[in-house]
Length: 284
Image (cartoon, rainbow, N blue to C red):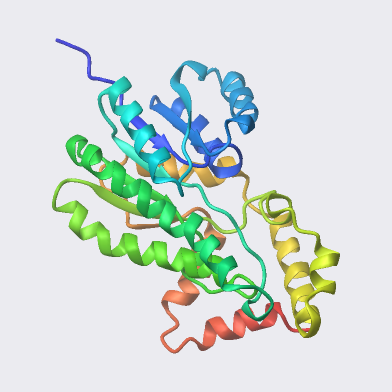
């Protein structure tokens, strides 16, 4: 009897954070892991983590820029040529954006949508024929910000809301051809608020004009929340579970705190509970 071919998963945005932790954990779980990132010059952290975990032989690092259709197509072509199959896709690549629209530009919003929404659409579209052949699954890391709109995150939450709507609509269609679709909703994850966005907080608040007090209140509250955040490895664990269970739920939160937060919105028919909650974040 011939051995079953090793299952292959492609993960985007693996240079740091949840993506890096998910790539290592997937390899530890036995997956042949194609770990992708836009800038291969940032691959050293993943290489070190893979070596420490003893899974270097199960992680293949490739370049993939989710906003470049040619890059997406080239990467998928290489994966199929080299491995013959794709069993799962984890859409993780994304970028934050802090600001409010009066003081930003529509170009800022478009750029945020391009990475966080259209990038997901591009990669999912390219992967679906291969996932359909393998009866595989699409897991997309969104955010609790894809369910609850948050102050000074208008562009980011708009993009994540769009991803959730896209995937919620795709899920029943994909299921008819054997592909499971799920969204993963982390809350605060350690090191991913100020550091990952390179925020100059004093300059940001100084430039905020009439919004300065509200922005400072928001940043103070959010930095405290991130002080007790999940680690990337903790956030990655439910993703690995969703890769392996027979029928993953469509919406998966990565912590009790995230479940409570999302639950507030899903039970809030008139929006007053969310407005009261998030309004308190920007009160002086």
